Length: 420
Figure (cartoon, rainbow, N blue to C red):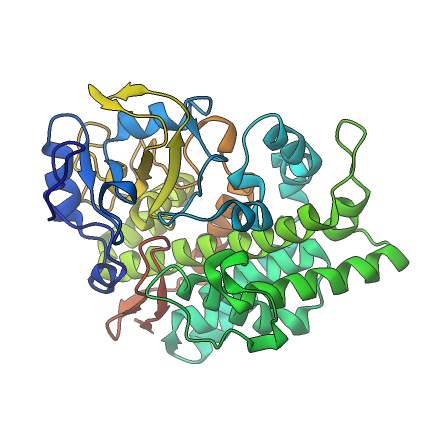
């Protein structure tokens, strides 16, 4: 690693997107956790200015998550790279905001994602899961991503939003390009999808964001003319503190909901299925005792760590884990490291569907940025497991997964699984 004047240099590279083509570098995270205090990790080509403090221990991630006044989501960016002020404002969504803006924005949609509301969508999600699982079994297996893990969450979130089901493949296509933007860069030309906006002003630097914005506007116009019983209508009609969402807030909300409601749940379902195929004894435990399914859901999420990290920026001089942190420093919570911390989990490298104490981080940590869609994601994963159990589906490993070069999403583009 490069020399640094900030603090102890990181003993491992956990930021290069291509490293994740081989899976999460757990040995590197373990080495960083062993260092007293925090380590300074280089990033980009601007020396200490673009580097960050790597937060990889469970207790330290918890402290950052619950201290939004010190570790800000709005001052900088929630990804590793820096943005100019106009780009940050153009992209700003719920996850890039602090109170009071964050409080207002969250209040607008919070009622749509309560446990009670989520239960109203369970029947729909179950019908979708049952059909996908039955088709997968009838085909004798195949690409789990394309046949089950990708279509299930996107069909659910699009139904909630009120988006026609025939547009599901298009939404998956766009979010795939957004994930690509978290790696070595997008393969799309800047003018893809008719984009004319400088890509630095678009989320993930991707013209796919322009396409999602255009689609969001299409839905806005449709629901302004014909309101429906869907979340887009809810977003347009909701008020918080006497104010409605601006056009920019609405489009950023729409994109966040499509991306987060699809990508993170899909990723958990992929890694969960791979784990169950590779650990048949754990699936047999679930078959013998289906009451373990709720615990299994949390273990799937811990094991997958769908979102690998989230960045904060120090709003003032402070200290974490005995390490002085200067105002303006990047502080990056690595959920992938915290979810294997032996101080928080017994036998952390074991996939255990009956794990009782499982305080994993996958939904933005604790505190005010806890993911609004956490209940929805858990419900979808549970429904999928229950529909597999109901049909005695037993998965077996097939081809090696095709992983994505991303340090943000623990993504897999395809993986062949067999039906044993």
